Length: 153
Image (cartoon, rainbow, N blue to C red; front, side):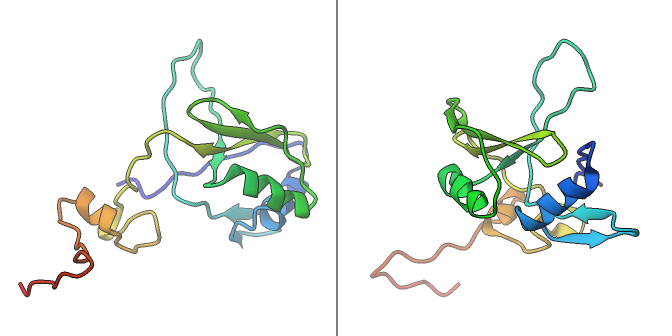
């Protein structure tokens, strides 16, 4: 059973890029020895695009408000490129201290439900959300409309 995904960024200055992920993005991390940090990420999704060759992968981070994101990381000394409207989302690009680039975008496309993982939880650390219950075939409880009384079951 798949329980998550592990993405790898290769860098000419891995230590600086790890500090960037820790300090600018504030991703939680664990030190697995000798300063080698593994970062926790928010729920993710994967898409398969046609290409001329295999083994080419890209990583984009998603946010709910790209303008606020650009302002927030700017306060931490990180710069973003211009925000471009690509139709499927609003996209900016950041250059990491090691020289690599990473895209950050505000999606405008439909988003899938979080995947259900072993034990019935979701990628949100085991919390069962209404969306995850529906994904498992269980009806989500809905709050009664304002001014109505909930029926006893």
